[in-house]
Length: 298
Length: 104
Image 1 (spheres, rainbow over the protein chains, first blue to last red):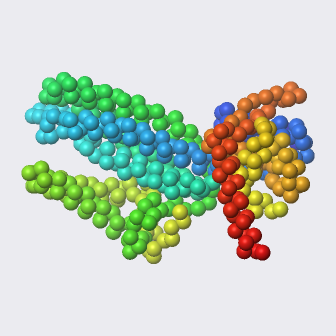
Image 2 (cartoon, each protein chain N blue to C red; image 1 turned 45 degrees about the vertical axis):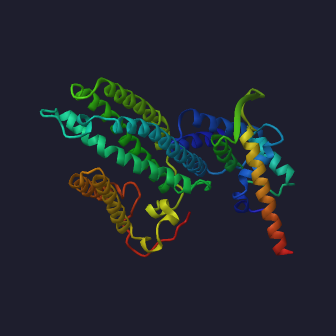
Image 3 (cartoon, rainbow over the protein chains, first blue to last red; image 1 turned 60 degrees about the vertical axis):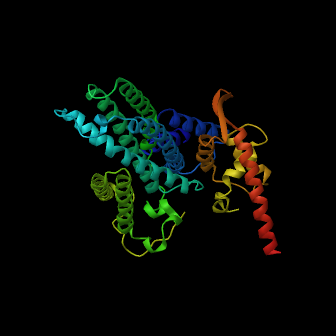
């Protein structure tokens, strides 16, 4: 009886994404329990496996969000130091005959950090807002994990692009900046690669806890004015406009108004494009959005 | 007592049981039942996921030991777990006080 029960538990744990040492440990603990009390009512193996996956899934999602945010902070700081100390040849107008790899790296080095920042911040925000919840909905855990994955991927793209720029444009940048950029790129890449085992561990779990995935309003909470609740596109347009305005004003302040306005408009459009393409995947909006305002379960 | 009523208090109960010394899973459940005169009888299997979660959260530590030729995992409260228990205890006292004041 107990052997069959333990076999069933082992199989259900594997089905819930709990394998390896964790699964062996759980089965050993239940075997010990049954040895102490052969008549013990431990419950359905499937329900137990789901409970393990839900509890561990919640914890892993929070952990991944925290680690991703910490790694992004390190990589972002290093990237920022290299970016703001960069010569014009690195991120300004491309030198004549610049190779495609270098041009691609420059585009990535501008776009990817913004994606990494937004996705990483939103992953951390959602995890923070659910920090007192014992078990979060499986859909929410999945959203946190997706955001952390996108943030880590975009962060890695940013750090690697920086290194590529330093190498491809070696003839056009000072050796001191090249060394700084390569160190920043390497250290940032290592910090972000360190997140991958946590991401992998969280991705393997298959929690089933009921509940919705939430949206941007669950992340931002009371920061969002009541009249914008339930209208994610209106909020996205406002944020894009604010970003465009900030960049345009920075250009005007830097005596480069036309370039500033052009960059501002382009960045605002990129914001909206990102919201449209990644918004649903990252749980910023749902197909039902646009209906009546939702309550905030946080 | 209904197991649903215990759900919100399971973590605090497990921390309290382990505050008196290390125990393995079966002994935790036994101790919980003994100290509550059988009133807090939990569905036994549900205690293990909670123990794993509390350990992963840094509130418990665990180590293998051997008893009667069997391997068993023994749990103990960490320093952080002791602090958390103190916090939960304070919250519980405040809650009970408030409820009693209303019910009296």
